[in-house]
Length: 226
Image (cartoon, rainbow, N blue to C red; front, top):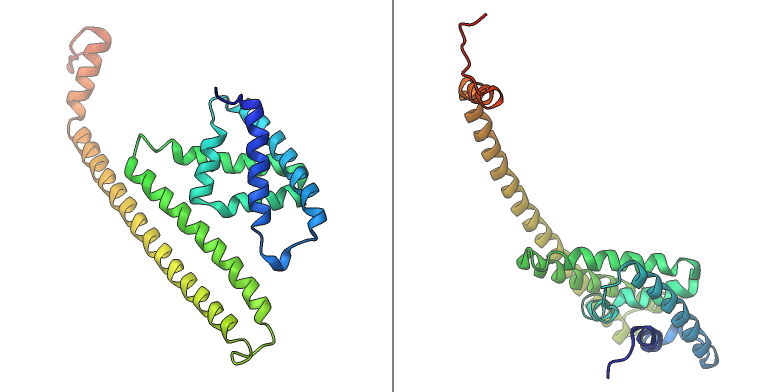
């Protein structure tokens, strides 16, 4: 027997909040006694936000949305948790933006499967870029004031993260350029076709006017009539 949706939403919100809040870096950890109330607060806010979304999109599957972001942009789920704690009155707005992004991608799934797969790959890469940038910031803060010889492991970990981020940024740029070039080629082809149609229409001006006159009146256009 399946779990009713109104019971499933709070369960999903609580489980994800527990998972994601506990996955924060240790240097940002708060005393354990504060963790449970924070998780309950986030879960309550997220449940309320989800209820608003379900009212707006009755056919939307919360499980599918959660799975999408867990796979392609897990950092945004963590960001939503933080947003709920820091800006509780805007929790629903943050979720709405996530839903808008999800729906904009899902609408393409059946229309253009190739573009759909490209967008999924972009989401995954951009998520990794955001995660790396935060990791680099934390590592840089920890390494501040130290020399490579004083903290070699931290130093090399920071260098590796920087190198990975640079490579991803280059890859993202090249793929974006390639996609834009494809779009430019497509638009240029469409423009050539439109121009050809325009020229053909201009060349057939008299015939087009005569035919339209005949269709509107049932009579032939006699150019010699006054």
